[in-house]
Amino acid sequence: MGFASESIEQPARGYELRIVQEVLLALLAGEPSHGYELRTRLALALGPLAESLSDGQVYVTLGRLQRAGLVRSKRVDQTDRLERKVYELTRSGRERVAAWLRDTSWPAPAPAVFHLKLVAAAAAGLADPVVLVKLQRDELLLALRDAQQKAWDGPTGSVGGLLLEGVVLRLQADLRWLEACAAHWSARG
Amino acid sequence: MIRELRGPVLWAGELCKEYGGGAGLVRAVDRASFAVSVGESVAIVGPSGYGKSTLLYLLGGLERPTAGTVRLAGRQLDGMTEGELARLRRRALGFVFQASHLVEELSAQENVELPVLLAGASSRRARQRARELLTQVGLADRAGHLPSALSGGESQRAAIARALVNEPAVVLADEPTGNLDTATGAEVLRLFGQLHAAGQTLVVVTHDERIAAMSDRVIFMRDGRFVDQSTLAGRAGPELGAISGLDL
Image (cartoon, rainbow over all chains, first blue to last red; front, top):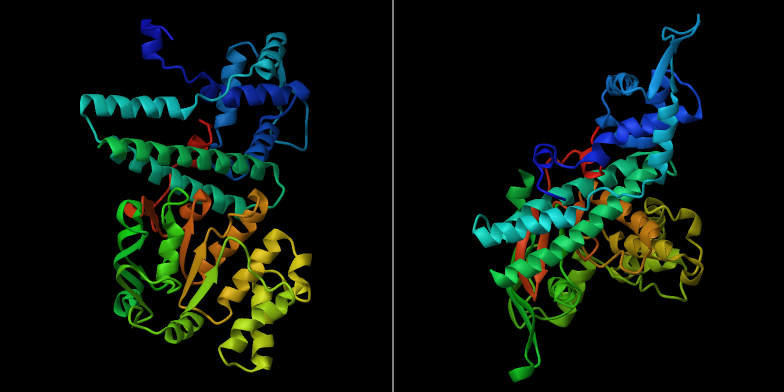
């Protein structure tokens, strides 16, 4: 990454920020859909984590995609439903979905960012790295507790539960690494 | 409030355990002090081979400390004879180990009955308690099976039933998920969660982060010493969506 002014103003968080857009585009690649159908399918995929999804978010994102020329909407005659607008992909929307599916980038790994924070804090004498590790560890332990609880509360074998399994495994790995950080920085303290 | 009135059910003061001597001296447990309240669940975590299991054996009176004191259910362990210790263990403690240590010749039901009979109860009472406990751990339909016919997760659940059958003041567990794969480990974990919710006092030595996360308090141990602790009970966690890589 360079030091161009735009990358300072807009840190690279593309993958995370784009995720709802990309998923909606991919869902629309199957068939044209109403907004509420898309919201239902997204909520199902996210399982218990769908509570982070606000009601208007799908519609706001669809509007943004429409302005970007990736999606178009049309009105359909329908007597049994309040919502008559159906969304479908444009040609560039289809191209975007194909590119997303081929994209193998993974969410930015937390270790590098956190590791550099510890190194910088120690070098500048800003904070005790061991204290920073403890703060982070408590936060991840609490997240692990909540993810486990949600996995137990949910139906077994659900697709949303599969996401939680990934969250649990990831947090376990992160916590294991934080223990290595604690041991390293304690020995130097 | 009741917890404060009763005081700690398990208390350790400046516990030390040394092996060997001279240049070969190993301090497996080094001045460990802590108190566990009634109904509290405590996880002791840290790398393997750094005194966690030894600490558990000292707390349970299975080994004697080089120095320091343990008080369990109002009784001081040092100075007790082996016989007194054994009686106190039967009455006040339930042990769960990494391996289930079930008696191979006895059925799951008979394994769970054993501690009740050893405590002097009638065989009828033992049968009834064992049935209750096996139902509680979800093994009612496996009660007649020998340990060799049980899966790893089932054996461990039977071992937990055995540990609970005399209504111990404290359950001490040493790596209870250590021998299990992720999915069967999760069964045992969930059972511990239910025990905790039901008010059972638990002290678990583990390097399984999932057990640590569901405890009221986590004590971090390194080189035989307590180096840190975190209280998780009553604290709100972060937004899970953000933790999982979503930014909705």
